[in-house]
Length: 388
Image 1 (tube, helix red, strand yellow):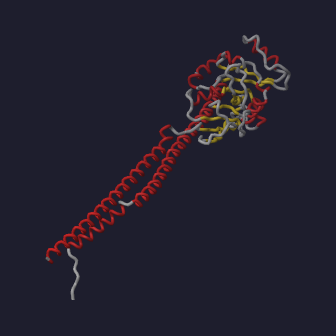
Image 2 (cartoon, rainbow, N blue to C red; image 1 turned 90 degrees about the horizontal axis):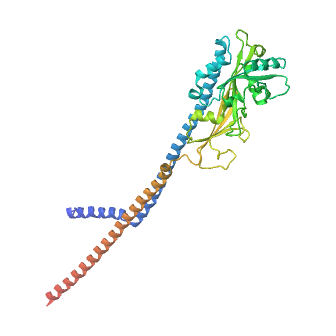
Image 3 (cartoon, rainbow, N blue to C red; image 1 turned 180 degrees about the horizontal axis):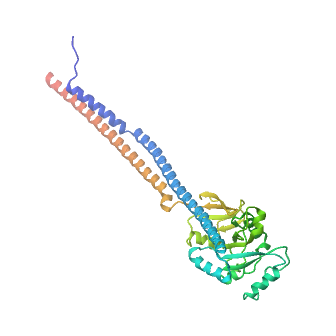
């Protein structure tokens, strides 16, 4: 009984065969195409991931900027409301507030330096038809012989701006103006008087406007009541009412004061109320951008709502053409190109190795065949010599 045992030479041949089989798998044209297809898949995934990443970063920056602008506007309007309440406190603290005392108070605030965007701080009083004549005469006696309540005409009730500082050429145009005669102003004035709260008007064109650089504007009012009188009900507040401390705002100047003179990287429109149209457009950071204009699919958009002193503002934000930087725009393309270069390089290397492997095997086969032929010929020669 014989037992077959492998020799070291046979084991070595087995290892060589396994190595050759492994080499054939990797040095194979089919493998090259498989690697190329998988490479395309990975490159596509890398491009998609890169694209999603840069878009997510752009959206995060846009969201942060929207939040910053919204918060800045809300905070600034709240601060300006406190400035007006400071005027009410000044009236309550000073026994007799006249024109000079009011001018000194407002001058001390340094509006242009500390409160950019406020056109001025004024005081308007209600005037009944019976009081109109004596009121005009009293103001004229202060050194304003041309003073009158304007616009002219007979009305059931009047108001008159008697203080407005700084008393520059623009604000002098509003001196004596009856804001109660305008529906938009009267709504806000009535709300301030009856509620005891700050009240902002809708869109108006300020009396201070001229023919140049006309801006849309609004006014914010806070009520002044007689000291010591009850103000618990609407009737009591009306009975105790003395006038309105108020500020006019030119919207362009206000937004410049809130966000600075530099152009914002985010375009935005502010609408008075819930409707977005030309009539309710209070401010537009870019005159070429309008809510009813052509849609830009690349632009990021966001709508925010602000409640300000009884008024609702709709803030519509847009990133313009794109929020992406030039580097971010090209990053997914660079990733795709780099991936494709690697894919084709691997395909070339594996294909080349497969070609070299086939050539080497062909040469080895040819050499083996030649050796066998030569061996056969030699054996035949030997046989002939042995026979002779």
